[in-house]
Amino acid sequence: MKGKSPDHRQLDMFNQRLADQLDPKHPLYRLANTIPWDDLDKEFSPLYSAVGRNAHPIRLMVGLLILKQLRNLSDESIVERWVENGYYQYFCGEAFFKWKFPCHPTDLVLFRKRIGEKGIERILQISIELHGSKAKEYELLIDSTVQEKNITFPTDTKLYERISKKCVAIADKERLKLRQTYRRTLKKLILAQRFRNHPKNYRKARKAGRKLKTIAGRLTRELKRKLPVTVFQQYSALFEIFDRVLDQQRDSSQKIYSIHEPDVYCIGKGKAHKKYEFGAKASIAVTKNSGIIVAAVSHSENIHDSKTLVEVISQSSELRGQCPKVAICDRGYRGKSVVGETQILIPKPSGKRATPYQRQKARKRFRKRAGIEPIIGHLKSDYRLIRNYLKGTVGDSINLMLAAAAFNFKKWMRETQLFFIEIFINVIFRNTDLRRMA
Figure (cartoon, helix red, strand yellow):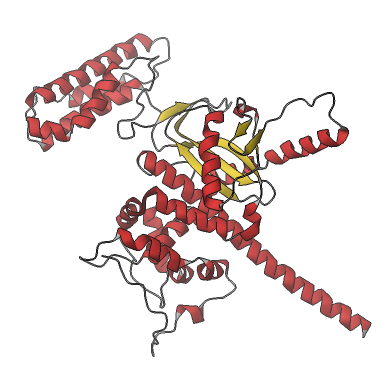
C-alpha cells in the first residue's frame, strides 16, 4: 500500500520546521524545490497495492536513491547519513528533523525492483529537463565504456572451488549426506595454486586444478542423483550454470566468469594498465556544448560499438522529445554513417576539395568530442560507475542511469550556485561604480 508523505502545512508549537532552519541558498535545498515530486508520485502510485501495510513515501525512496548516487554512498551509508543531515531529510520531503532511520537499507533494493528500469529512466529524464533548452542541442557526443561488476578476477580454479562449496551448502540445507565433503582437501588444493606461474610450481598447480574440477563434477553429479525431483527444480538454474562451467574450455564462447553473476562478459578495450575488464559495456551520449548526459544504455552483450548507436540515439530521442541531427564518435564506431535521421561523424582525412574553413570546423568538432572522456571519468570516480554492486543485467542498467542522473543533478546545482555568485559580484561592482561617479 502506498505511503503518505508528511504534511508541510501542519504547525508544531515545540518543533521548528526544517524549511525555516536550513539555508535556502544551499544547492540541495534549491534542488529539492525544483524536482517535480508530484509527477513522480503520480507515475509510481499504480505500482502499489490498494490494501496492506503502508509503504514508505515515494519521495523518500526516490530522494534516497538520488542522494546515494550523488554522494557516492552505499545503501547502508546513505541511511546512516540521512539521520545526521538536515538537508538530506528536507530533500526527501521531511517537515521536521527526525532522529530515527528512514527505512531499512534493504527497502532501497525492493524499491529499485518495484519501479524497474522504466522508473529509473524517468528520474534520468527529469535530470535532463531541469537544464531546459541547454539539453535540446542537435549535436551529441557518443562514446562507450565498461561498467565493471563486483567480482574477483575469474580463474577456473576459483569457479571449481565455488561449485564445490555451493554443493556442500545445498546438501547441508536439504539435510543430505554426501559421501565426502572435501573441505580439508579443497584447502590444500587451493594452497597448491599459489605462485602458479613459477616454473617449480607449474606442474603441481596444474595437477591441483584438475583435481578441483574432478571434485566439483563429482559433487554435482551426486547431488543430482540424491535430490528429490521437486527440490531439484528449485536449483535447476544453478546446476545449469555448474554444468556450463565444467564443460567450458579456454577458447569457449559465452564463458561464465562468476557463479552469482553469470551474465558478466569479458571486454578488452586495449588499455595498457588493464588488459581485460569483466562487466557490461555501457554507452553514454552527451550534448556537445553544455555537457549534459542525455542517454545512458547498458548492453547485455559485447557487441561492436557501431551496433550500440541505435539504442543510444533512440533513448536520447525518447527522453528529450527530439532526434539528434549529428552524433560525433571516435574511430571505434566505423561501419555506420547514418542511423535513422542522425548523421554519424567519425574522424577521417579531409578530402582534397575541402576548404580550409571546412577542415578547421571538422578539427574543432572532433576536438570537442574528447570532452566526453572526462565526463566518463567523473561518472566512474564520483557517481559509483567504477564498480557495480547491483545484481544482474537490470542492475547494470539501473546503476548506469542513476549515475547519469546524479551527474546532471550535480551539474545543475553547480550552475545555479555560480549564477547567484555572478549576480552578487555584478551588484557589488555596480554599486562601486555608482559611488565613484558620485
